[in-house]
Amino acid sequence: MKNLSIKQRVTLYYAAVFLLITGLVIGGFYAAFGYQTNQVSQLSLERAVKNAFDFIETPGDWLEISPDFDFYVDDVTLLVYGPEGTLMLGHEPQSFPQNTALRSDEHQSIDTTLDQWQVYDLYTEYPNGLGVWVRGIHSLSSSAATLRRALITMLLAMPLLILFALLLGYRVTRRAFTPIEKIQQTARAIERDRDLSRRINLPSERIDELSLLGSTFDDLFDQLETAFNREKQFTSDVSHELRTPISVIISQAEFGLDHPDDPALREQSLQAILQQSRQMSQLVTHLLELSRAARGADLMHPEPINLAELCEMVAEELAEKAAEHDIRIIQKLDPDIVLTLDQTQMVRALINLMQNGIEHGHAGGFIMLDLQRRLNAVHLIVSDDGHGIPVEHLPHIFDRFYQVDTARTARQNGNSGLGLTMVRQIIENHGGTIEVQSTEGVGSTFTIILPDQPSDEPV
Ligand code: ADP
Image 1: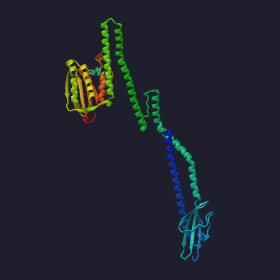
Image 2 (image 1 turned 45 degrees about the horizontal axis):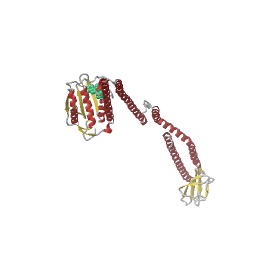
Image 3 (image 1 turned 90 degrees about the vertical axis):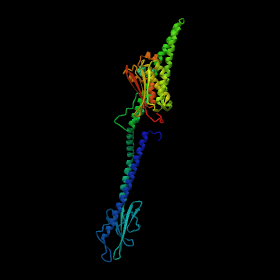
Image 4 (image 1 turned 60 degrees about the vertical axis):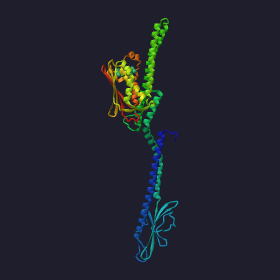
């Protein structure tokens, strides 16, 4: 039983239940039919015996039995006995036990090896003092035989019924299990061919637990495929990003080595190598930060933070850099907003947004930090009046390694195109979202929306 498939087990259970029910129905039928036959024979027996007295009269001090007295009525043999039990009229059926005691108004069942009898006796005493017994005997052999024949027919039909139950059960379970087979085949094909694009695709007209399971698996495969492709893309992006500085380093080193006698050229090569190495180091730092942010919840240390104080802290940290670019930092902060956040991550996100604002701003311009409650959310808005982002780039700026500026200019600033990806990851770690609005030549606005929660509940 243990090694049987679920399909076989269900089929067997199905057949067993089917048989049990059939057995119960046959048993019940047999018992009910037997009881009914018995009842009917008792009634007709009693009636025949009682009717027999209509043909017995006592005109004087003797008994007179009418010539119409019938000794065989409705399968009942009638006998007349004297008060002492002496057979006066009628013939006992063959094989009926002769010494069967007379018992007035009582039904007796008598089994012999040859037959089965139902007996009913009635004694009546007439006013002239004469008494008489009438006995009715009914042989159950014919109804018992009918019953036995019916039972044998049913028992003979049993193997056919079992076969029918097994076939029907197997058909039903096979149909029910088709989606599971399809799920299994798809999973196996994905594993065998390493092809995550396969889907189960169960017919949509069928909506039951298994079709829901199938579509859940398809959704899961979708997610796995997206995640897998993203990882592949990421590896290729990282390799691509590292290849450029590495080839510059190699060519500059070769160039330096080719000019041993020219200290100025060697110095130039070394400077180029240093710059590219710093850029690589920056890139690796950004990658590490991004991977830390991506591990999100694992590495978070949430604590109640006053967001206005956090903004002021970041603004102070970037004040010098902003002053270098002649950019003012304006703050419009609601002082009473306390959220449970990971301070390190939030500071990193805010620094990134403000640094972008400084880098892409213009002298005499500003960066504004606006913190406010709106409905059930906290809005932290970082806006600037810099050169803005062209509309065609807006949908991509949160993608990894995506940069609006020409690659050369951006790389030279030590930027990697990972900043906004990390900012979004951090905000999502806190259950929030980030939106951007920007107009070329006017400025950009990044809006962080965080769920507003009591400070004792983690975000
Ligand atoms: P990077 O590290 O190169 O700055 P980010 O992911 O931070 O990468 O930004 C992606 C791109 O979005 C940048 O190349 C930049 O051109 C653009 N960008 C980001 N913030 C601003 C801003 N405040 N103003 C204009 N452009 C911006």
